[in-house]
Length: 232
Length: 232
DNA sequence: GGAATAGTGTCTTTTAGACACTATTAG
DNA sequence: CTAATAGTGTCTAAAAGACACTATTCC
Image (cartoon, rainbow over all chains, first blue to last red; front, side):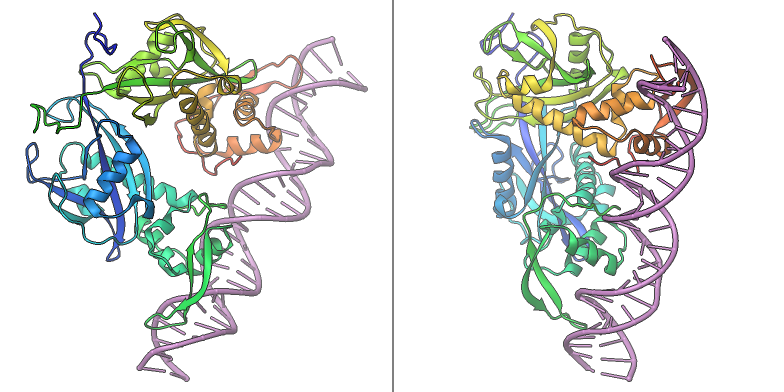
């Protein structure tokens, strides 16, 4: 017994949403953008921003639209990639909802404005968020996003997506240190990132710190992979 | 204007399927399991095996079920991981269908039997499959799966999933050589894989080749990551 | 000058890669 | 013996990590 669009018996229509793990480094900590839900289910709880994929809209487009609605930031200005899809039957009490999670990494972003579904949006340190109970299975999604970000710092150049341009080698090192939660040797780090081909493009300018020698300024280069990798 | 399950206007119910990129090494080539479609759309074309996610069924469970239906192989016996989700609005002419692709890697599997939707199933070398026109966007999904497999050989132990146990170091090396399409130095490869912690567990037995010194036999160890990595 | 940060050099250890060499089998 | 494959040893180059040392700034 088939329906007009070819679904067999035992297969009902479902909903698909896109949820965003938006990470940045603020105040020396890795932080995620979370919203406080304005309606049931989980009303008042913290959750990842997101929403339904609209008719005729692709997944990447839906992620970029939600990102803009929650942060007023154009997706072209930061790193956006698909993370994973979550579809446990009981993950949403309203019905069968599949969520395609996206990971967004960007520099310290302007404080977000309330979006369509967002009663309130705020930055929250990920270690605190992971200890609290997020709505739905968003705790697991956030954990998966953080782990993906940590892993990608090793063998890609995405760390630079966290830095507002232009940035110094020390800025970049602070990103690694905060995301990995570990101190790195400044000398060796400097050698590695400046020798990696097409990772950093010098602007020629320098920035004066409060104290110490001026640091050379860089922009993101065209490389996406990092060879040799910087291992944790 | 909301419906009973919370979908706003402009968001219609959709379908979600699971499609499988099932890879093995046969006859010295990397091969994928493809089906010849028995009904429209794309009737007669080659496609990835897959089907609808059923009511109350999780994604991993749907992937394992489809795998068994197409190959009669229990998912517990091979490597199965989520690959990526595809949701372009026009990827299926029947309507809005999101496909969660899974990647399955296993030893030379028994020839598959025709499944529910499969008029005919067959192993096909991936280089040939990628040159032909697969149904839907399955060419891109297959390419993504192959690239994921190639990348994972570097820093994980999944290559052993391709080998029927017990296996020799040369068996494992052949997997790398076929998947990467490159010759590897037998001496250096031997040192790397036998020194990697918990990658290979010796059985104590040996296997006699047609000609040459007997080779030690191994089973898969508990390690999932490979340190140090074996780079392409 | 002292304190602090940027950046370079140097030394040791680890790993990759090339390849010589030994070990064990069949014929 | 030879042929072929398994496995070890050795050498060189590259890279990691520790850390000494120099450079440039503010105070």
